[in-house]
Image 1 (cartoon, one colour):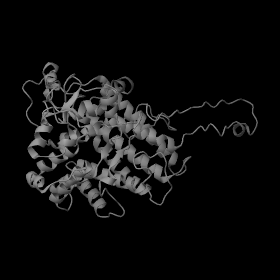
Image 2 (cartoon, one colour; image 1 turned 90 degrees about the vertical axis):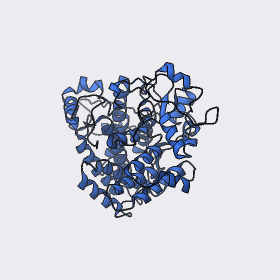
Image 3 (tube, one colour; image 1 turned 30 degrees about the vertical axis):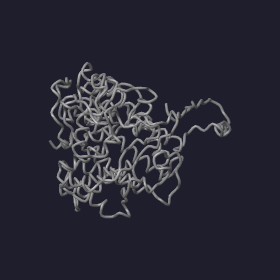
Image 4 (tube, helix red, strand yellow; image 1 turned 180 degrees about the vertical axis):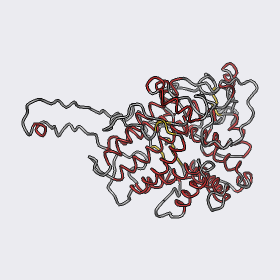
Amino acid sequence: MKRILLLLITTLLTAGSCTKDFDTMNVDPNNPTAVGPQYLLPYALEASIDRYWGSNIRFERLNLDGAMLWMQYLSRNIYSNEGDNYGISVALYNNNWKGFYNDGLVNFQRIVTLSQPGGKFANTNYEGIGIVMRTWVYSLLTDVYGAVPYSEAIKGTAEAPVYTPGYDAMEQVYAGMLADLKTANEKLSTTGPAVAGDIVYNGDILKWKKFANSLRLRLANRQAAKKSAESKAIMAEILGDATKYPIFTSNADNATLKHTATRPSNNEWNEVMVFGSRTDWNISKTLADKLNTLGDARITVYAQPNKEGKYIGHANGLPDAIATTYLATSSMLGTYFTQTTTPSVLMTFAELNLTLAEAAFDGDIAGDAQAYLTKGMAASFDQYGLKITDAYLATVGKATKETIMEQKWIALFGQGIEAWTEYRRTGLPVLPPKDPRAIFENDGVLPTRIKYPTSEYSLNEANVRKGVTVNGGDDSMKTKLWWAEK
């Protein structure tokens, strides 16, 4: 476990007869009974972001062995049944649910409770950060599972505890998240108290405000086809007042987890592929073919050239006997992504601009879709120390829905879960036909969600079954979620 935090829970023993000052006399100032936000924050940040980005535990890698394969960024050269053929283990949907709720949400909620007015460590900036990160984790959960416990969740230790929380429809979860991000922006103050333990922005509150508002734009755009008026109003509010609602203005604002050069706080892909010596992944043929066709220099970062100096991938879903024959010819993942200190990315300036390009193209905001598209592509190149060329811009051409979403897919490399969500929402980019030699589970349907954990059926059955009904299908990886446009 990273940045291990030992929480010592003490039991208060009461006696029938005691002196008036018994409680005061028996408080040890060297062993506090409440853990401050400065200690909870780094643990919660790293635990939740590591799980989102990679997880070094086999069968639990939602990004690496799920979305990165389903979105055809990577392909497996062995163990195709670990995600590449749409097969996943029970541990993937059980333990990611548990991890995001227990390690992420519980601790972010503790930070909010401790730092809110009247809390033991009142500090509006810790409170704001806690709300932003609580919202980010909820966005992952609802976008992956569908309806989830939200309004009654993480209340097991409340004054009126809730042990079997109800499930809120995605529409309600989105409404709550968008409102919370507005509140977080108001709580966060650049002239307010300092914070410690911030391994994302190192205590830079302006950047937290930018992340809160940029994330709010992401979510507003994501629901725009279902709640047009509300989404337009939110985006207009943010974009209409840059002082009150600052957003990302460069790659320096990117929301990323900063890793260290030494274990155990190194990048999770480094842990799996370098320290764990796992070489199970290559670049997908889909990604390699697209970037080669476009003459896209980002392939030099995303992949390593093979022995012939070429960037080549192999198809997804191939049985092991076939996939292993590509070991000598398929490109491996680029070394940038396997370094100890490579940041884990939550959201970037490139993604924000490509989101605004889509919103402008759809008529949800004022502005030039082409300009946003160009700015988004340039930011993505710049993120990796590359410079976009006029020739590349000419090759990409005019801003269309298809072009914008294809460029967003390319820019989201590494953020497989976000790319998967955008694909499930829009059906874009158009992925090539399956290789005839490939064998897929899930009736050949690219997963639309993942199943609810078995623990919910054991401990919260009535509510999880209501959640299944709210989603509008069965509890399978073929039920489309609320924001799906197609």
